[in-house]
Every structure is written in C-alpha cells, then in structure tokens.
Length: 445
Image (cartoon, rainbow, N blue to C red; front, side, top):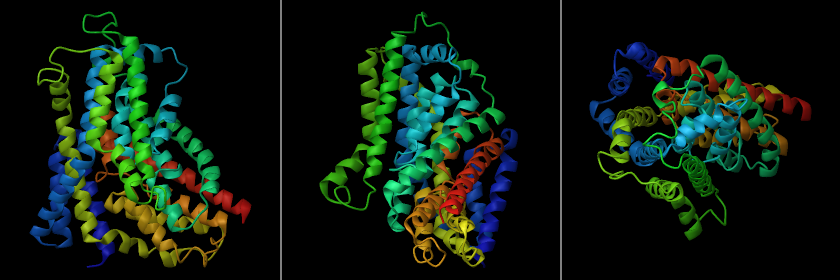
C-alpha cells in the first residue's frame, strides 16, 4: 500500500476523532485509543504491532512529560493556596494588555527543550496573568510555537542549523525579529478567536480571605520559580548542541540532567514553598495540594499518554518521511519560493508523526544535498533553509502532539475547537514566518 494512502488514512482518523469527540460525546482518552487501533486497521498491520507501539509511546510520553505536568499542577495548587494566583489576576486587571507579557513569556519558553514542557511549567503563571482564560492559553501556545521555530537554543533550530551547516549568528539576526512578528501575530489571532473572560472558578475570592497567605510574596515567588524552571529547560536544550564543550562528556550529561522531570518537580515545589514561606498543614498529603493537583491532572496524563501512543504507532509505520519525499520533485528549480520545499518537508513529517525534533532532523537531512542545487548553498540561503525547516517542524500540532493537549485542556477547548484555533493558528503563524523568509531571500539573492 502506498505511503500516501497511509497518510490519507491518518487524516481521515483525525477527522473521525474530531467528529466523535465533539460536544463531549466520547472522552478524548478513549477516542485516542480507538484512533490508534483504527489507523492500524486501515494500514493493515498486525494487532501485536499496534499494541506494542502504543504501549511504548504511552510510557515514553508519561516519562518525559507526565512528571512535568504534575509539577505544573502542584505549583498551581500552591499558588492558589498562597493567594499568588488571585494577586496576579488583580494586578493584571490594571494592565493595558495581558497578551503582550504572555507572548513574551512564550517566546522565551520556546527556547526550552520542548514547548510542551515549557507550557506545563508556565501554566500556573499564565493562570494568574491571563485570568485562566481560553485566550491566554492560546496566546501562550502560539508564542511557544514561534519561539521554538526560530530562536536558539531550541532543539529544532539547533538541529536544522547544524545539519545544514548554517551560520548561527546570522540565524539569530534573522530569527529574532521574525519570532517577534510571529508572536505578535499569534497574540492578535488569539484575541480574534478566543474568549478573554477569566475562568469563574479561579477568579479572586478576596486576597484577604482566610485561605490566603502572603499573596504578594507568593506572586513574586511564582514568577521567580517559573523563570527558573524555564531557564533549566533552556539550559537542557544546550545539551543538544553537537559540538564541544556541550557535545559530549560530563558537561553535557550535567546539562541534560538539569531538565530532568523529577529535578524540575523537586526544585519547583521546594523553591516555591521556600520563597513564598507558606505551608498548608498536610499540603503534600492526599487531602492537600498534592491530592488536589493529582486529581485534577490525572485525566490529562491519560490523554497525553494516549497521544504519545498514537504518535508512536504513526512513527513506526514509517510513512512520514516517505510521504514527504513525494514533494521533492515538485520544488521550484530556483528562486525565493524554493524555501517552500524545506518548510513543506518538515511540516508533512511533523503533522503525520507528531515529533518536531524528528521532523527537523529528517527534513534537514533531506535538504543537505539539495541546498546547493536549489540555489541555497550560500550562507544566507543555508540559514533561511534551516529556519524554514524548523518553522515547518512546528506545523501543525494536532491530536498526536503533547502541546496540542496542554493548550486544549488549559483553554477548555473541545478537540475540534482546538484543531481550528491552535492547529489553524500555528498554520497561519508559520505561513507568516515562511512569507518573511521568502521575502528576505528575494531581497538578498
């Protein structure tokens, strides 16, 4: 069976998923499990294959992302208990705009090792600054996508630049302004299609209430802890640099360990308790912060695991890179529009198998020998091709992607609404980035 047919089957499965989850008819976890088996049935692989692949993907996702999500949930519960969330919401009501600070946070967080992990640790801060509104979740998600597509040391950018032997300094000069433009576009898009009304359940009960302790100190502590955890994830991303001093040895292992999920949990919770100087009796018990956080986040963990299982099934089928290869003969022979090819290669791979880093590495590898023949062999051409790859590698998040589900649950979107808002928003945002890259190539060629 042709790999194009495999890809078409996956698209049909996603469409069916959106249909059966609309208005809560089927829980997303159940629907994702059914989607994995339906896709496997469509491609005609064995039952043992889908069971093994799904289980591996489920476990890998929970190991890599699950503990980080629990960390974010615990931070949110502690922030609510100290009054930090309420204090931030009160302060933000006087701001001219909340989207700007959230977009800036997202661009910074986009440089982390994964945008999903960055969203998880920034989510408690978002709930305060953005009032826990759907718009704030979408703004943060789109900004994370823009930052991860264009800013060093995001692993997708590092991989693309390294494989295509592009100049990093030039990449910063091109990527930073484009990231700011893309982040602003994402904020405007979110303003136009998502509600800015705060979640009624999380609005202030009164900062002087009996359960609130040191809200100002708690708000400052939450800000500091969020930035520290993002910094740890950014430093971890430096471990992906394929050269010394970080490309091997003990230095690299130490850097990679800084973003370990368990270390993020210990540092984040411990530092927030220390800086806010607040303690709820039995806070870490089943009846306290820990119990409430785990109860709230348990459905999301199951969904994330199932999404990872679906992604692993799609990856193991091997259709993504084979489908992308069909695009190579369609590329223009030369000219600025040739940048559409590296973007499209990465976008097809990302959409079909879910991993942005795998998409960037695979697409950049395909472009290695094609860059010079297509007129992209000069320094600027290689940088623009690399950034086109990394931008494509973020396009588009869908039901097999962790960031998709974090934004969906934080924004209280239905899966079909998230496909329209987040997936559609990233597609338009990436189109803006690609247009900027093409314009730069036309001006410098």
